[in-house]
Image 1 (tube, rainbow, N blue to C red):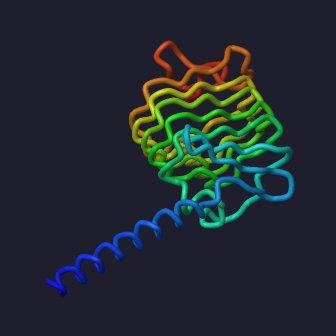
Image 2 (cartoon, one colour; image 1 turned 180 degrees about the vertical axis):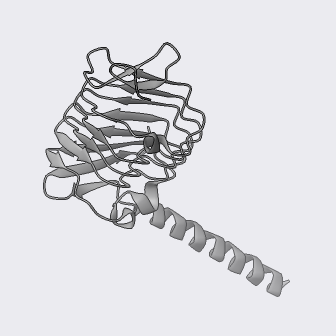
Length: 196
């Protein structure tokens, strides 16, 4: 009987220790911070929204150096790149399996390679008027991506921009765009509709 009581107490102690360790690990997750010289990042756990704010370009670094990548990647449902941010670097938001919503600020001029690649839940993207360049595979491997809205500033969009995103149904280009257009089926063309 004494052995059973000691065993039960030992198991109870182990369970409490494990619970305390998990709670401690969760509490130690960094949810905001500086990113480069002029940018900040913040994760709202309640809404699953990652916000990048400040002024200037996102600096180039490897995906593993993104402060939100290692711990938060599977909890991020929305990304907001605020006005003031002027570029989205390569791989900035790669492989966010729960990402369904992207808001790109009106000062972003370039979107880097693999910026939103492998976003398995993403269905629609709006590229604002300020963006002039989108790199290859920026929206590659987005299995559920169906619709892309293109603003007036984008000068070209290579077929590789959506590499292996096979479910795209339409691309809609602003009528104010002097470089690109789409036909009635949502197919991307140059402005004169002579080149796909």
